[in-house]
Image (cartoon, rainbow, N blue to C red):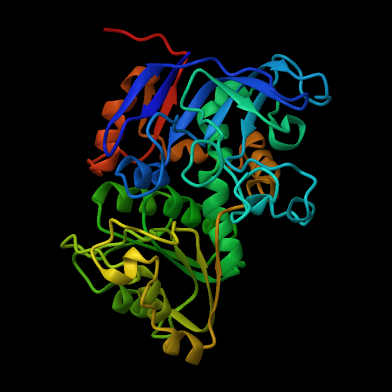
Length: 385
């Protein structure tokens, strides 16, 4: 089959690789019909992680079940499924607690809890930016989609990661009806944190970014755009909230945060959130942070440490939730919103491309080129010259 393979920093290619096969009775093989490029793929694409050369990218996957192992009971050939990026066994202590993001079984490294498809340090699982994907513990991991899913693939593929992750930020922050919310980062995760806040009936949602296309999308879904290249974002949030600060804040940038001049500061958005959120307010952090970052421009960052203003955070009585999203906690209910036509997360999609165009798509997305807000790859689409 064809798949998007990592060959080093900013070097991916569509290569011929072995087809996946049933290895355990609980496996299924899914023919991938839609797979997204995610902002967290860029950390690996840029060489800022330990992702090994020769591995396949892709953790936001949707497709058709074409083969099942003898122990699979609930999935059948022809079923359309969205596949959470978390690889989870479904039976360990953490999975039983609903913490599928920290499965104790799926990652063979005893020092790491949690696994994912095509992701650095998240186990040996191949990614789904490919024609086919092996899904382990398939009955537990795959979400069967309702009738008509093929006509809404660009909506349902967002259930694999990006929308639940944005929603998770709002859950950790404690967003409730009537709240004011500030989201730092207007990329796909940030826009979905904003979208989720709107769906939760927040009274005001603010999105801080500096890319005009992202800010335009934020405004389109009902958020207040704040351009941090033109104004002090903390001051702008305080102005929008009568000087109190936002009730809730979402960090959707991560460890490669940088100012408008391009200077990296891994704690930039964390500290801005502490300043922007009110006394006793909540903060949800889903932007990726890592235990070590050899590519960081400063010594603390190289050690995975960030100089946050903990004194002010403590003094303000704020609380913070962090970590990857347990997709299964949210994906079924978010799926219901799509099926009922109460949500259309495909608003974010800017490009649908065949798998063969993945290398150029990564270049444009990595460069934050105007208009490249979310790319959906179609591995089985017919290519044209």
